[in-house]
Image (cartoon, rainbow over all chains, first blue to last red; front, side, top):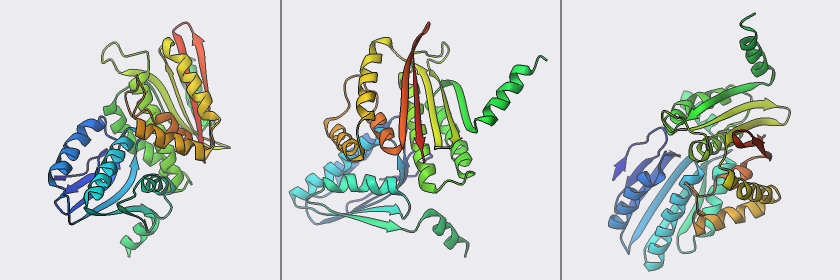
Length: 131
Length: 177
């Protein structure tokens, strides 16, 4: 499954070995966005082997927090069943809101390996782009 | 002069350093349209990306509260009517929202906001996580997390429920710096 990013929803890539979410999430109706995503995950994520979850979020609203909670709960259950799950929560150096959000989710992940990965700040990333 | 009130409006908005203000029926489509201009306005200030993001986050929660819970609705579209603004103050950014609320819900709202205003960061985090786990309370059209989320992002917030001839009017003011 591949969903292109929109102004209020993130890029979404789901395969049998990895899942990637990049961007912002504050859709008008989170159910409309999350239902097909959860359905897809349930059908393609295996029960054994290994799986990588890559997140790079810049902002999500409180209504979307429930989706991410369900998303991580799904992977935690898969990990309990025997799947090796590696989660990378990428956040910008100066983004304490997304760091905190990552820490909140990380706390509940027992079986999944959950890494908080610091990226260069937006300003320095822009500067690199100009070089 | 016939234009006195208009001139006063301009002067008033400039003097209180209001970067953005909208008053009227608010819809999700309108919120999509104003998101980028609001961000642009924030990026023109000296604030860091991190502060701008917090201001934007509080703004979105307040806007969605108006969309979902404002008691006064547009007679044409049914959209919630309210006022929302972002201004610069000595205490940082002030994000304000005003809308009428259902009189039957005003006591419960007041109680939960008084409760939130007394919590520290650790307690707010705990509440947030508990609410995520338990799901939205009855009557919530979102995750029931909006006010907790805002309380976590602001330095402090104030609120008031004023009785008017049109029913109770809810005023929320959050400071971010």
